[in-house]
Image 1 (cartoon, rainbow, N blue to C red):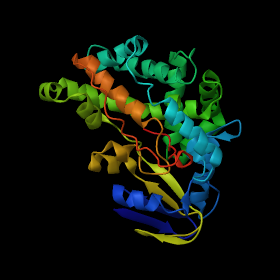
Image 2: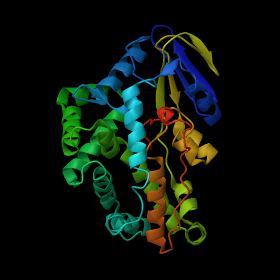
Image 3: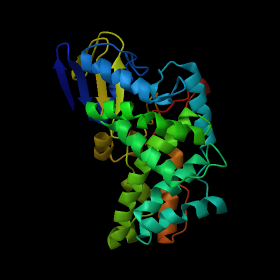
Length: 319
């Protein structure tokens, strides 16, 4: 289903919440990222803010870079390969997820989740990374400011300098790597929500006794609420007529809930495929195993293998 909001000179946005339509639209090369200040007023403001928020020292996050950006494609292919076995059970990983499994079981408070998960993800990029209350608070504020649709909050976070301060603190902890900052500051919150769902499932005696680790991971997986594309030229897509600067919002959270398919949540068939898909899914599976004291059966790698390494799909940033 698509819904088009257009007010001349003010706004031109299309909302899409059907996974089939999202897949069809996302294959259109006229829709891309690397947002520019084009189109109606609110479109220009939103595009400019995104490019400002998701950049470190002039280097944009992968989620802000174009589909034909060769450097982005190569970097994300390498990251996908590096994360392929990152959730393989090892004594170190089992120890790291103990507080997360305890939270799922209901024997640890919610406050342990963010820092424990942030430490786990941060060490994928910096072996010496350790979370702290200050780092987790920075991640929470940064994510809230980035997702906010309130222009007054945008202005306030800019005037007070909190956005820049939080982004700088996160970046400094992972060597100013934009991908790592996205992981410990933005994408991490989808995993936190997934674990909250898993805690609810564990509290239900029926689900606790019937769900294996793969089913639990599928049932609890939370996709990003939305991802954005900008029209680069005139064209027609299902539900909308595009002009340069038109914005299309894929309501991925709604689409993934309806499809009940991790491939939708991770945009696996898209050029913006999430490189952390296998890692996140296996991590959730392993946490369920540790919480329920069941034997671990490694889930099938849910990522499609590209026919050509040069055409390796690259990520939106992942849930």
